Image (cartoon, rainbow, N blue to C red; front, side, top):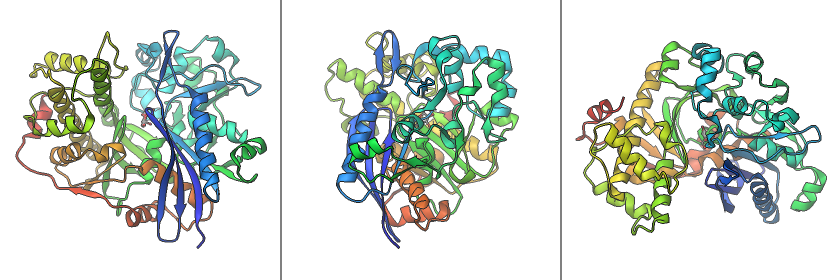
Length: 490
Ligand code: LFR
């Protein structure tokens, strides 16, 4: 059949990428045509996203895809949870907040006291992260922006709105907000009403794979694209797209989507909303094609990248990622294990409160050996990540009653050989690592299907990824007592 060629925009907290993606009968391939740095901006005491800058770079990337060949579609995925508010004229009401902004401190506790943790979980099935959209909107109650808001648009939907003029909320991303009823697949309007959130700002839901509309004429002209190029709602939550791009054979697999965050879990047919799942604080996010992403958010390589940033700002020598990780591999293992999901590791590193010192303080508090040097801190972080993956993957399989044979690691972290091996060791499962750009691939594949490629289901999409990309395999090694290491964290 004919080749489909699309632009896939994949936005991460530290970089944005625009790829051209091509699907032929027996291959899917992507080409990175544009990459730009991203990061939250502190202004007036708050932490914001530079969303207009992100949009400008998104346009530059799409323009590059259009310049280098046919353009049949555009799809956007990004990190979840964050949103912009637009007023009744369609104008953006201020810069979107970063979920790492401190305005949500203490809000979750208040909401839980008001609604009850059990009811909150029964409705939304979402892990208690302090920055969930629900808590951001509660924090914004009474603000001028929220009062003037006509619609809340999650970031990929906001960019899609600027491209097409069509407002909506793509389902995989909507499901992360904790404003979405995972049982009915509708917005949780009762919950909003009870909490004084103006539920009228929640836009109509749309399914991944649906078409938002064609590019607005002036946008198409500016991009040098044909007037009828459709923008397709992909799994607009990057993790949803990454799970589509997992090169799994069959359904008996666990996944670890490893970037700034680590998302570790399973793909299921239905949510797990049991009391045990609530107590384990697992999340049930909507996946592509009606699947459920039953997973745990683990704070992830953020802790390492913020440590690196902190060291480089203080001009330590030898804190380049690759050499640091290699040195960490030779450093004595399992000396210090910390709870990598401690909320104190969420906020960006600052000179007054640097990330490496926070890690050391957690170790001290837990009675662990206190790591001081960069290599000791790096080892503590990778060991603690591996221990967290072990615990959460096992918990997921117990709660869902399945037993995966393999753990697929995708995303940037799949290139970290040391961490991949430790993950295999800790989980006692073979790890299959790659592709790095699983999210962009998932984005391309879902677009491709909407545009006529013969990809009837997720299995067919994954098959194509498997045939197109090499992976690396890690067998679990014996020798270290991971169970004892896990028992050292609460
Ligand atoms: C990963 C991710 C996670 C989400 C976090 C914050 O990039 O999308 O799935 O929990 O970012 O939005």
